[in-house]
Image (cartoon, rainbow, N blue to C red):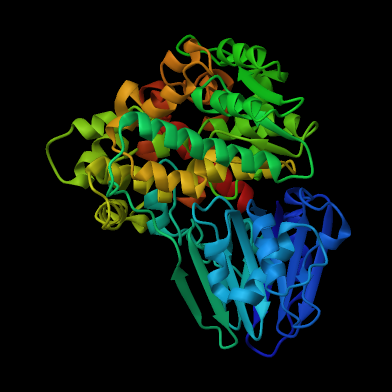
Length: 588
């Protein structure tokens, strides 16, 4: 797990070494173990290393093939690299290191751009070869990859902040991205970002940039959500998902030369990961939980559910209870680490948890993705029960944070336009190869919405502390299998029915049968006291007023009754506005 950056010039000017140094400085927390650069004519590549596999200097990056001059920078983990390495050796390749980095380099030399289809894991990488730059992102977008184009120049990096540090980026707010941000609770789907001058490579996609500055994209993976030709019984589906999940967990524990722990909430998903890891016979299994102060409406921790799981499997358990005063004091740091604005209240929670976990391990498994892949959220059954309207209307009623008219009332006229988000969601739902409406919804959630919400959030907040998070529920083979499963096996039992069946007997019944929980941080949901003062100061600041992004009438309405304005999925609308403004103040 690392941070990568690069510059490709098309104007006969050498790449800017000072700009690269600034980019790598911004990526230092993602890769605290080493730094490297490689320059070759019009290209300069940079890398910050978090050493997880082959800890020796032989796997340092940028990695260059001496015979061809081909160079690679890579962020991520390839779980099938031992098998690929053996195949490449049989084809005549000689290896000089023991890690997954060189496997990607030699896979490129053997198979060209088709190498990505052989990689099983999470990755974002760039390869410089014969006057072209090739970039790739994993199927589910677990690892980030941003880029900017300018006259005579192409740059890429693991974060937008690295590109901003390099300079020459148009930082005007993209009106389409703004519409997505406030409709889809901070999700801005690829290729857009909030900055007009920064884009991101879509999941499951490669990009080639040639010496003339011409860019081409290729989508190498897409998800089909259709029933199998040979139907399975419910019991057969349960066994198939169980085995696929077992293999996903096994790969993510075996492929590491350092200790691997688990982020254990009080929910089903992470509890099931602990059970499956214990089943693998992992010695000295370490688990980590975080909790916050209660509010009258909501508990601030799930220790009553996580503690029994830790006790059941005799894990070396670590618990952190963080007071509200500490949350507020550390919130600016968490916002600093947000590559893009993040409204979810658990962003700060993950930041504070990752800080503590990183003192003990360098890799953790996390349960992100299970709700999207297996239908765990409360809005899925409500959407399924709808019988009126188009797929967009059925989705919108239960998911959109704001309808289009409210958004127009919220932002200044300069950012008005058509219903960009409605158009995007309608198009994604209508894509072929999905049998039912809920198949369409879960596929879109898994391949688009999750990428720029929980997945990005976990990557940002763990990598801020040099901690690698692995997400077995987003193993692409498991995701493909689950997409073919009948929706009723997901939505039954109030969601994630098949996972509950698997967990029965492995996880305490109280965890399985409890009402669906969400990483609780009540102070950012029920806004009052110091947190309300904090948000009021941001929205009343001269910077906010001068920016002129929001309608003051809308801001005043929320400030007058902050606890009365929640989104359809129970987010604080006031926090959304304050977070974006604060993020803009901190990130320019």
